[in-house]
Length: 143
Image 1 (cartoon, helix red, strand yellow):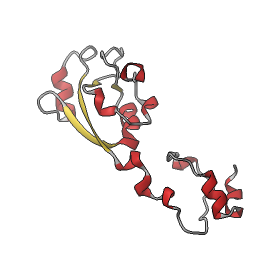
Image 2 (cartoon, helix red, strand yellow; image 1 turned 180 degrees about the vertical axis):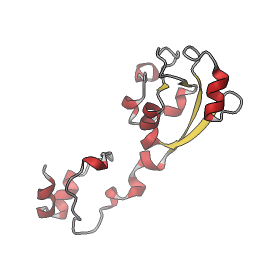
Image 3 (tube, helix red, strand yellow; image 1 turned 90 degrees about the horizontal axis):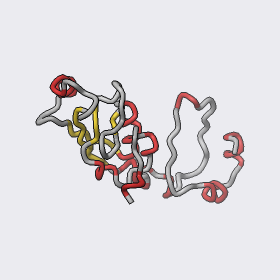
Image 4 (cartoon, one colour; image 1 turned 135 degrees about the vertical axis):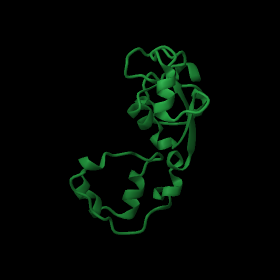
């Protein structure tokens, strides 16, 4: 539905369009935003976005197969005891793992020089919904 039709809609019509999950958009791609008259519905409020309000702790370590000098990676990322604990909102986890090229396979099997990090405890990803972005993540073994 085009954005110019939203202001014409009644609140009841907008409520029917609401989805259970929140969506993420690249702000640079929006070319026309308008303020919609009326109050924000309860299901549209930020406290209803479970993925945004949930904080996940990821444990990242130097990639066991792709890194010849793990001490270099440990120094670059400021790791302690061979690992780095990163706290991130669940809504941002897939993006973070993609941006940092973290191998999310169970057996650290992604090959390539871009994968310097491996996710040690995949259990931390339970319930995160944007894992399609995470390199090597396959939920088939997690069910």
